[in-house]
Length: 190
Image (cartoon, rainbow, N blue to C red; front, side, top):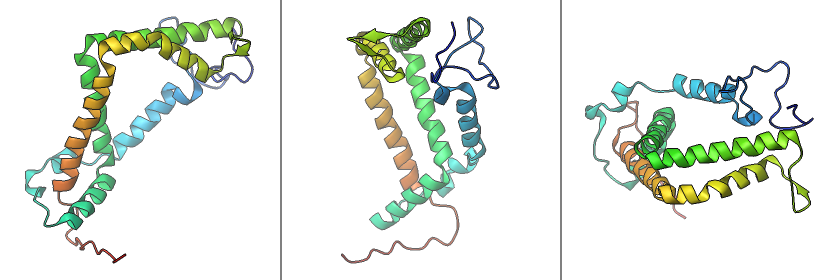
């Protein structure tokens, strides 16, 4: 099963291949394990100490709306990696706590993998047009959409977004920014 020239899923001779069930796992180049690992390592290196992140002595009520805005901006900049891991943790919690969502994800990945393997054997042509990688992903999504609907994936998405905004927003607004020289937010008249 040779890859086509210019295919986003082919593995170059110098690239390491991620091990899978069959020995090789073909992933789009932008979704390779190496890229994900590098991103995760960069996030992990930029993470602030969790002890300072949750230190109760650094939480206080802001004096005015300008201070809230200033705290949110500074804390989003300072604790970006911590907030990313909180968001990923909430997603992981939802996936693990919902067996039906795990089934829906497995159906999606399986459908995409089968479609991709078929496209390696010969070009997939639908209505006289060759299917690109994006079309293949869309077809896999269409096949697995009923399972995602039954699993309540829409509810999970809104729950994760709401919980993330509540947790991160309250932390960013109530946590005092690092540094003793906290200048006031000066608002210019419009």
